[in-house]
Length: 362
Image (cartoon, rainbow, N blue to C red; front, side, top):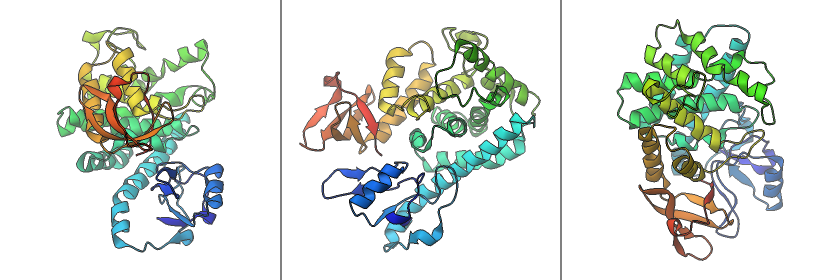
């Protein structure tokens, strides 16, 4: 929806690029607006912008500040994205309430979890909503809630892409959203600590899969495979994971789907103590540095899907030049063919190993 720039508040999500007198956006879409962005809009005399109908914290935008769209086509085109964003943020705020209740000792209400989560996952699968860019919506202070909802959606969607039947990919998605429920049993200071964890604190964090498993152990509507996936989602094929240090033959394949989703979203998201990385950079690190720790079938699924979605994406390179992705090969998904914005030069990043994709704008 369109809102006057003078009425903007921090936390609004920009839904369209804000263009100036050059071909480069003043502020790219999917930016979470902060005071400095709002001041920039005022300096450039931008009268109105297109934002989502909810802030990042889930609160609705004051409708009295909106401007009626002049073209029906614009309104129709923006509706699906806003609808998904709206439902996603509602799910995050709902999960936040659940998490607070779990901290107080309440049990997991599986019927309520299914009521909120399953329709959202079905929507992602049916409409091919691009869940790989959910990290845009994540914020440092509410990271744990965004992470759990995104982990559930990513896990369920990856399972669907890998050919699992409906019942299985729903169970995998449910296991994904509940995998970090055990974090509610840790001392409050640990999940929201702004700096790196101490060795002692990390040892406590290693218990959260066990705590989560105990929370779901007696829930009859969650399959035994899903429960095992929750317990094992931090296990690694080479035995370096936790809480049990299991190796490949003892690790359930469901858990590996959640493990990859967990790592992908964590590395691409803004954290209170660490800046986010682009999906391309994260996938490159997974392919180069994580070989042997994760199921190659899951890695292949996420890499293939990212390659399918990348054409037309606007990116910023590590040398700060902007470009558009023209084509991505399945064998080199993190190093696509690009066209530089300023010069129009076409480059193939697999021939320029000193460069990488630093940021994705859409």
